[in-house]
Image 1: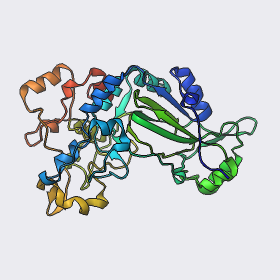
Image 2: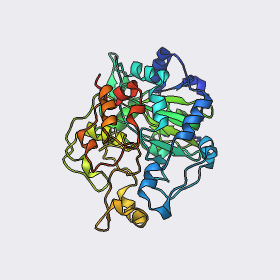
Image 3: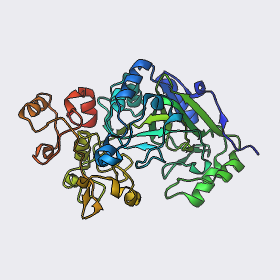
Image 4: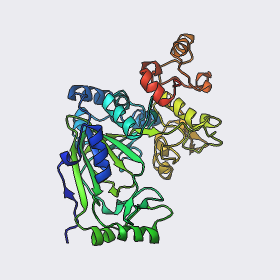
Length: 390
């Protein structure tokens, strides 16, 4: 019994037309859009400008600095060397609001496509997110999952269908980005529905691959998206069965949101800057962007750690600066390598001229200089993040 995914040509689920993209999403649960208005030269320039370990190096002491990747590594991620840094095994790069993200957020194909898919008029709201590096091709059937709770519906004729569900996005920016999904179009979903009723009605995530191969053998699909010259936007329905596939690629996460989260942060953990306490979740994002860091939580709602997972603190504790230690234990804070002096009267006046609103705490004397020049961002991006009111 061959249970390997069937590779399909990218063009089967690729389109430049938004109406076709919606059809592909309805049929397959996934679609690919080439970002054809970004030239290879522009992509390479921005890739070269983007630092992958700026935050890590701001935390590590001088004896444990991390080497930034070469352009050869960035353009051919199969050659991307291992580094002694948090989440190196999973490939997550803890850099936010990078030149890569901002190139994409200012791109008409990306934003117009997302606005159409999310049915948004006016400015789209965005939350900051990070990047990911993959080094080799690897499929993992055990990561097969569907996201959501009430994921099924029945039509007037009693036919069981999977609801459309929320749309997820990722950008394949360089290399070859693999996506693995299950094409269940025109298949009887009764077995999957019964499985869901038995195991997953509270939070249907992981699905037994053996069950899927028993009832839906031959439906497992794989597409390898060539991003070596052109970045591609990959979108999928979270209710479409899909897997976490690995491939030699650099990816950027973009996170459209319905509204900014104005919940007050009541406490912070050891892996969050203490200045987040008392701010709203949204305000922590605004403040964090000024340092190209993450806010209080990820767009998924999980608490965000900036540098490494807490379970590996002991591995890194002897390698970090005293600025991030408290009584011999790890205590995170904003990085202190910025060169943008937001405390100056001139800088604050320029912010006011453009109606840019940043949490007041950012201008207190004890706060480190900004890493990112907020004034360098376009009004479009500032509105998306929420620095400028719509």
